Length: 187
Image 1 (cartoon, rainbow, N blue to C red):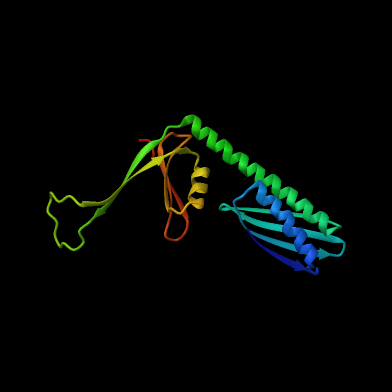
Image 2 (cartoon, rainbow, N blue to C red):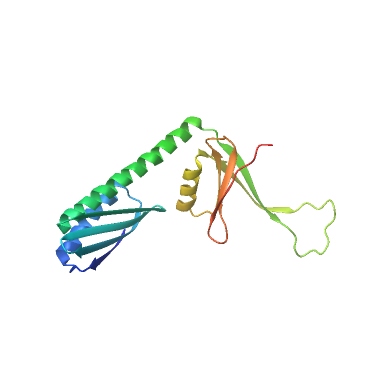
């Protein structure tokens, strides 16, 4: 977990930095997929504010707390983030349980074909050669969970069985970086 601390109108002392780092380590215990944390400590008159932006497994979580004491502000924002992470974990568990109950996996075949670009003209009975063949399990999940799985994984395409429509769907990352969702329409 990479932590960066910024101070606005406040001197960042070593004990203050150590306190923030120690408190953030508790978040790592409740959710071990925390990647990057940015903390902003600011003081305006009597208000001492702590803001935390966190990236955890492709999800951005933000929290802030304001009191008259900086240490109390840090404690307050860590409590808020801890509650958000627990809700997120519970949501993941619910999706997993629903998927296990429905458990209607579909096998999807993925073939990479040799299109013979070196030939100028192809005959009518030409069949392209299969370079690679792979079977993929399309597990049941919601669209939100599929997007989250795509963000977490290293693939650009994910097939899944939509738990609402029970049909084969796909989400993929387009070349411009946007995500697209393919869902069959009923005729």
